[in-house]
Length: 103
Image 1 (cartoon, rainbow, N blue to C red):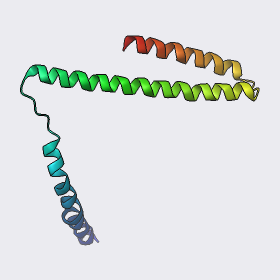
Image 2 (cartoon, rainbow, N blue to C red):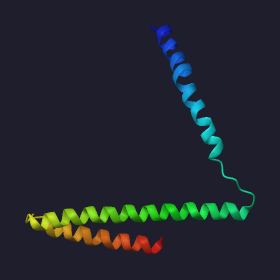
Image 3 (cartoon, rainbow, N blue to C red):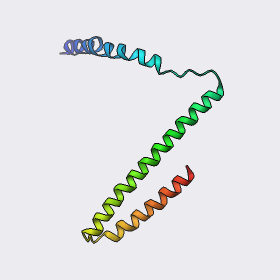
Image 4 (cartoon, rainbow, N blue to C red):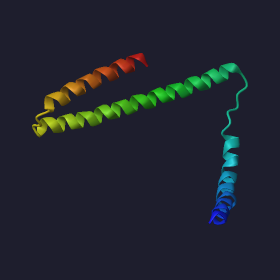
């Protein structure tokens, strides 16, 4: 049984993993940044940080939109916890506005 497991590991390593890695080696070569100065590094880092911040803002906005749909549903269906949902949504909006102002 142990020998059979070793054969499976060898098969996976040579027949599956190596061709997979060989397919991605050229991609790794092209993915490298061509940078010649420190200012270029700073510019690339700034662009990356700005992109991440923008994505985070869109995600927070989507979360607020989903929360608004849940809040409206709770209000329409006359859920007994609708006031708690409203307070929680208002707190979430305030927190997100504070986070956006910090970012």
